[in-house]
Image (cartoon, rainbow, N blue to C red):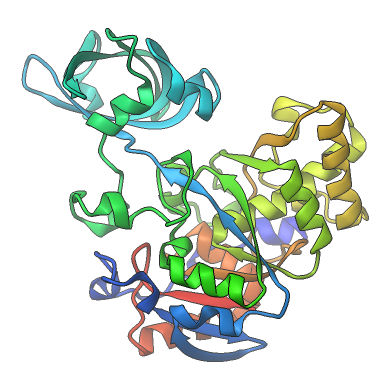
Length: 406
């Protein structure tokens, strides 16, 4: 199975997406977006506000509660050259919660725009935060291909890095929108239930939810659960290799409460994931449990789900219930109420879904790993689904319409 999946030609997952079908701005009312309905080969449509009417009875709905950070920082060199620093993932401290609390210095792995104009030296930026002046400095320490280790420092210990980003950072809307970030994006490019700062891209399926839709889910007896996956810039990375074998998946940090894992365990077979990020988190849990079944004291990088593990390990017989129990036991041994790890999982045709029975998701770019994930779930029916969306005036990509795939 792994050989067959690795040899998938990405060109087979292409379709024609006219520029005018890309939604550059969201609708005024989130839940009035169109909703495509797919079940057992049949395709219909409705409005997103009616979503609760189409969900299976008693389903557990799993949301990704990550919050997009204002990850882009613009500096000006004394020469006038503009340098953009895009914070990707924390290095020191290597924890999102801790790094946002830092009050003097911290280090991030970053992308640097106009890097050829910044060979050496320290960049400085004057920021006004709550009527307090502070100088933010950026120093390039090491380079790793396209990424750079940047150390930030500032001269006011009363201010956290989170406050500096909120004051001076720019929200990174997707590059395919071909426009600058606007003030209203600070509100519209966040889900209404976002909580945990760390993403550089929104889990866009969640953008359709309103307080009214969430209330209706509760009224109809659906149970909600949350996980955290911090979406990385790699989510926009196109597959540039002929076959997917040579495409390298980015690392994404995940955090799941022990109580959530117990809840998921109680609802195996009836789980609906909101967005591909929730799918990747849920499916990664199974393989983390598999790792712990073989090495109960695994930690750190050993717990990270590698890209091809589901395919190389396709003959594994561990049940889903047993796998999740291994994680619960692991957390209990370490007296921890939260699983903190990472995943590089790629979900492509040939993948066998373990936990997810339904997906709420937007319409994704041609030749993307997200489209591969959808194809893995609905098999060859991805093409009729996308043809229907194109023929019926659905809006595409981050600010576009959505689908419920069962």
